[in-house]
Length: 133
Image (tube, rainbow, N blue to C red):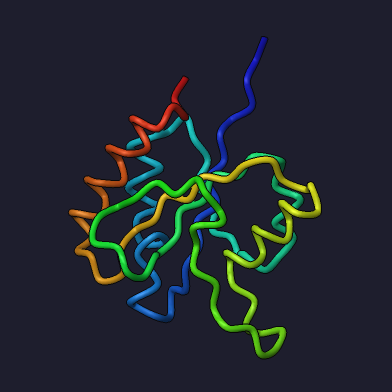
């Protein structure tokens, strides 16, 4: 029986240094984990088409080490004033409520972390996460 290739959705804004680390890590992650697919993805575009189980790498504010987040409800929502204010947490909660996704794992990279340290910590968590099996 063949397994599907694990696909990591990598979020971030390459134009904002504070939010670009996951995207800047992609070339190194592709070399370290050639068995996985790492794709730059906009979290507001058809996330539900990516399957029922999502693997996401994103910048996270308010953490000091790379953290694996599996509880969508633990993500603090941003205030929603207009359609432009929908964030990843809100989108994931909505998709789960609509039963369009079953689970999500967010590999959260702290905003402002140095690239070498972010890569070291993220690689360790990806390798230990059970994604490899």
